[in-house]
Each structure stands twice: as structure tokens, then as C-alpha cells.
Amino acid sequence: MGGCFSKPKPVEVKVEVVLPEKERDKEDMSPNGKASPLAYKTNGTTRHYHHEDRPIVLNPYTNPKDIVEASVCHVKDLENGQMREVDLGSGKALLIKQNGEYYAMGHKCPHYGAPLVKGVLSRGRIRCPWHGACFNIATGDIEDFPGLDGLPKFQVKVEKERVYIRASKQALQSQRRTKVMAKCIALSNYSTAITNILIIGAGPAGLVCAETLRQEGFSDRIVMCTSEKYLPYDRSKLSKSMDSQAEQIFLRSKEFFHTYDIEVLTETQVVNVDTKNKMVVFKDGFRMEYNKLLIATGSTPKTLTCKGKELDNVFTLRTPEDANRVVKLASSKNAVIVGASFLGMEVAAYLCEKAHSVSVVELENIPFKKFLGEKVGHAIMKLFENNRVKFYMQTEVSELREQEGKLKEVVLKSGKVLRADVCVIGIGASPTTGFLKQSGITIDSRGFIPVNKMMQTNVPGVFAAGDVVTFPLAFRNNKKVNVPHWQMAHTQGRIAALNMLAQGTEINTVPYLWTAMFGKSIRFAGHGEGFDDVIIQGDIEELKFVAFYTRNEEVIAVASINYDPIVSKVAEVMASGKTIRKRDVETGDISWLTGKGS
Image (cartoon, rainbow, N blue to C red; front, side):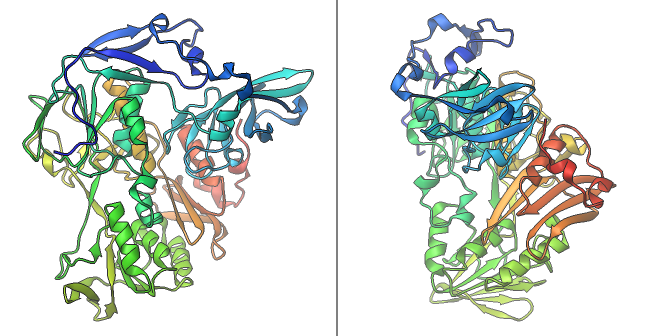
């Protein structure tokens, strides 16, 4: 069994809480302003870690050379509900006025660097205009995903009708802040075969679960295991940035996992889970006991069933090496993509400038028809055709022909034969839950794990998150759904962690999805399954529009191209519990959506 880190020896426990930036005093205070100790569990026993017991951490703000203070505006320059990007000389900050109070924080989303001044301000938080991440304006903490870090928070004061911001130069330059985390320097009386928290899977759900536990003061052993050979990485970039090396898309550095004592066992596959005895069995026979378990194994790509599916240059794009090889094989050659899925279309778009030809084979007559509707799907298809992508619709692959052991042709059931030097399969995926058949954990007919709003399975102490689950979606009247989005996996990982600590937190987030093709960013929020109409505002031919998906006179999802921040605004309205009616968007007047929040 492989491992990123060596297995610890059973030794005495020591705990340290690492407090970055200026968070120490803030974290010591409860909502009523009184000192509040951090609670954590060791070997199942709740203990409290008081302020006076903590190691002394020097406040970086005590270095005057690191501090900048600047007057940024007059008090009348900003109305309630308004935001402004201001320059402090050493970097920029986002200044916000809400309910008569001023707040200042980092001006870029830590996820992909989106300008937050173009985002949506509502209910005490700012939502990113690109991918929907939400940050608390009072603390800078991330409250909805994607992304792992919060925003640096800066001091604001008003003096003689001028607004001043005082900030750390380092924070201004970094534009991100890792939340306070506990760490376990050594483990108490543990053998390598025992852990308090075991996380199967090292995607965003598993990683956010581990980080949240540490952020909440949990200081016992946490083990993540993955069948892959890498630390957690951004798998979504495999089809968007196919030349990337694994190290370039790591979600966290190796040093991060060492610092916060999150063990990652790589190249380790779980083959059996014994929930009665709280034990898992690995492929090599190694056994590990756990107290709480998270299943976050993601999905496995579906493959073709035809002759030739095992050929060397046929890929399902599962690893960075797969992506790199596809790019190399496609260079000045012929690439065939089977499946007009998001993955398939992203690969087709990426290869266009590198390959001699790119062909897409799809069973439907229009890409994304079931997800985005016929009109939007047709507009995207036209975009691809204008960039030399050839579509073969309403057909399937009947055979992959080889020459000297390598793929040379893709034969379609329509009779068409396509030249192919590389083929990428993007026809969907199935939940990776086969190893749970004898576990006692409920699996539905499609292979998904049903969970409740707290990400709990039917077995006490066993949680699940990410692509493998169906869960109650609050804004769709708690309809049980599977949402295999990057953002949703983050959220579910956090909810699972909070409930491992018995905090009784329910999931209440709006799904948010994005993709980029040929320089056009498509954003999507909500859950459009079963939509019966699509209301489009803007110019769909020019790819500058917003599409509202409705069911029974209610807007259930929204998509846009070049119409920011409309999708983030709709997501925020949905998250607030408000209903958007079909009649509200049919008139063409959507000013009530695009206006600033309050």
C-alpha cells in the first residue's frame, strides 16, 4: 500500500492551534464578545483548549514595515449596498458599505481571481461573479464554494468624513487567507491501523471535510486514502487545461498536509467496508479501524462496449498523464471525441488549435440538449463549428479499428468512418460504490448513496459526499438529486465534517456550474432537471444572453454567456429562499435581478 507520508508511531498527544494573520483575537471571541475556548475531541472525548494554553503566536501586524494605511474615499462616495475597489498603494482592497457600516477585504476571489467588485452583495456576504463562491463581509470567511481559502480582512475607520483602510502589505498582495486550523503534532496511543476519521477519496469533498475538521478545532488523527498516486488535485482542469502537470493543479501543497497533520495514503484502494466493526480492508489486505467514516470516492467514467475499446490511444481522461498524452497524440493529428458532454466538449475546444482535425460523435441531435435546452445547445454547437469542429450527431460508435496495435479509425453505426489518431470517451460516469455492496450502507438502483441533509447515510457514523450521493436539494422542495458539480462536492464535504462533530448543520446551497470554451464562459446555477420551458433574454446568436429554465411557472435554473453577474444574482435569490416566477422574467425586465443587493 502506497502512502504520501510515513505511518506515525503511537506517541503522546500534543496539540497546537495555528492562527494566521489577525484572526487570533477574533477567534477567541464568541458572538456575545466573551472569550470562548476551542472545543475538540481526542479519542472520542470532548476537551477544551483555552486561550491561555495556546502557544504564543506573533501578530504579523506588529511589524510597522508591513502596514499600509490610506484614505480611500469620502463618506458620501459610497451608498448602502455599494462596493468599490480602492488602491492603497501597495495593493488593492474591496470597500463595502452595508447597513451603515464599512467593511474592507481582499478584492479578488481566491479561487480564480475574479474581481469581486463585479459580484453580488447580499445578506452580509459577497458572491463571486464567475463561479459563485461566497465570502462573509465581516470576517472574510468562505461560506459557499468553490475554493478553499477566505479573503484577508482589513481594518476600516472613519475620521473627519474620510474613510481609511489599514492593511498588511503581505495580505494585500496574497489576496487570500487560510482559516485558523488546529493540528495534531503527534497521535495518542494509535497504531497505524487505527484512525478517528477515515476519508475514502481525495477529491474536493474529502479535502474540504479534512480541512473543516481542523478549522473547527478537531485535533485527532485524520487519514485520507486515494487510489491515485497524487495528493488532491483539481480534476476539472484535466479537460480545460490539458497540458498541466499534476503539481501545477494540486489543491494544496505537500507542506500543507504536513503542517496540519492530514495524512494522505496514495495508491490505496478500499475493497471492503465493515460498518459493524468499523473497519475497512484495502486491496493489499491491510485493515484500518475508524471512528467516523466519509465516503467520497467520486465517479468512474463509462466506457464503450464495442470492439477496440482497449486500444492504447483510447482514453477516458482520468489522470494528468491521460490529458498530457491526449494532447501529444493529437498534435497535428486527428482527434475524435465520443460524447458531447461537458468533458467531451471542453476537450474538443482545447484540442482545436493543436489537432489537424477534431470530430465529436453524439447520440443526441444537439449538444447539451437535456441540460441547457435546444436553443442554447444549438448556439454552442454553432460556436464549435465556426472553430472547425465537425459533429456527427444521432449516431454511435460501432467499432474502433486498429493498425499495428494503435487506433486508426472510428467506425460509426451510420456507416461513416473517421480517421483517428486519438480518441477521448466522454459519455458520462457511474458512482464508484461497488466496494460497498456488503457494507450495509444503502445503495440505490443507480449505484448512488442516499444521504440526508447532514450528509449522513443509513449507518450511524458513516457519511458520504460528492458525486456518489443523492441528497435533498432545499430550493427544489428537498427533491433527492445527484449533482456532480465541483462546487457541490466542496459544500457537501464541509457539511459532513460539521456533522461528524455533531453540529447539526443541514446543507442549503444552490448548485453552481461553469465551463469555458473558445473564450466564452458559460455559467449555470440551480437544478434544471425536468424544465418545461426556456426564457431567453439577450442575443443568443451573439452569445450574449441569459436563459431562465422554468417548471410549473417557477424558475428552477439559469444559464448565461457574457451576462455577468446575472447567474450569481439568481443563485443568491434562490439561496435566500425566494421564488422567481416565470412571469417575472418573461417581460424582459430583469432589472430587479441585476440591481445591487442590500
